[in-house]
Image 1 (cartoon, rainbow, N blue to C red):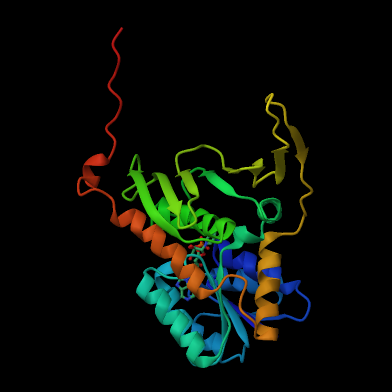
Image 2: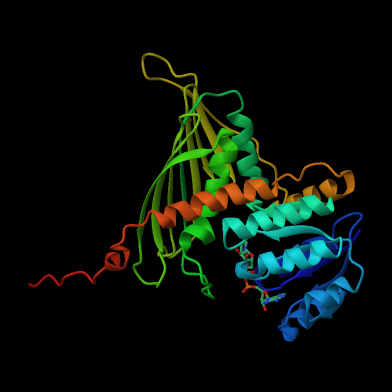
Length: 321
Ligand SMILES: NC(=O)c1ccc[n+]([C@@H]2O[C@H](COP(=O)([O-])OP(=O)(O)OC[C@H]3O[C@@H](n4cnc5c(N)ncnc54)[C@H](O)[C@@H]3O)[C@@H](O)[C@H]2O)c1
């Protein structure tokens, strides 16, 4: 399969690197208006560098991955679909639910594969959690995803950039849609929200909580899931997943580390995309799922109180003496 990558910044250059090593795939070229960056990636990986999407499509690619800034996803995806090219688009699927739906409709009309890059689903620690909670009665989920400010600020805040990963995980773990949203947002340093504490209830009755911010000096990603029979704790970075089970009336219980694979999540994700293109079967993360997660993220922002601007934190008062 002849593949191209559109946008080779932080994420797209990883797509390009991983695609060069995938069986049955040939990285034909990368497109980025920043030609220095496109040339650098293309020279390193041995493919063509072009400045525009149209030039990449002229190289007769069968499929592309789109890792350009989110506000361009819709236009770029529609241009590729119009030329009969299968699309994997980075998360979030688009800037708005309407734009996401336009991409879905175009791909469906053209009979092309559309997949959304919710790569965390392919994290082996996340896969181990999903397996551990199979057939369990899930009660609550708590996810922490914190870290420092990104080196280049885009025009989105922490909810659309980070929490959308976890909204997708909550929907996927529970196989249920989020029906209630209770967001608390604040802007400590940035213009947009840089701290978010989000609470949800799913249609199946699960309570879920996301704690995310850009104000932590190191990256941390953790997930805990309480079910009627188990308590699961996972570190998505070290990939250590532990479950407590066999709760006894005297308070004792058993504990074990779960076996977790080593695969690179992006490689697994791109392999899943190639499989969906080849087989014509549904993508592992469909456009509809990408839109559903984006819709919840946008609801979190929309329910921000009118006084949000006033919620920009003041500097702490100096304590005298
Ligand atoms: N799945 C994840 O974990 C993850 C992580 C980071 C970013 N992302 C997503 O990937 C996308 C890109 O984010 P990033 O952090 O790599 O951004 P980035 O700014 O590092 O890279 C974007 C690249 O797109 C290029 N670009 C701009 N206009 C273009 C156009 N018209 N055609 C082609 N390329 C164009 C830019 O020159 C830049 O090189 C965003 O949608 C973001 O949400 C996903």
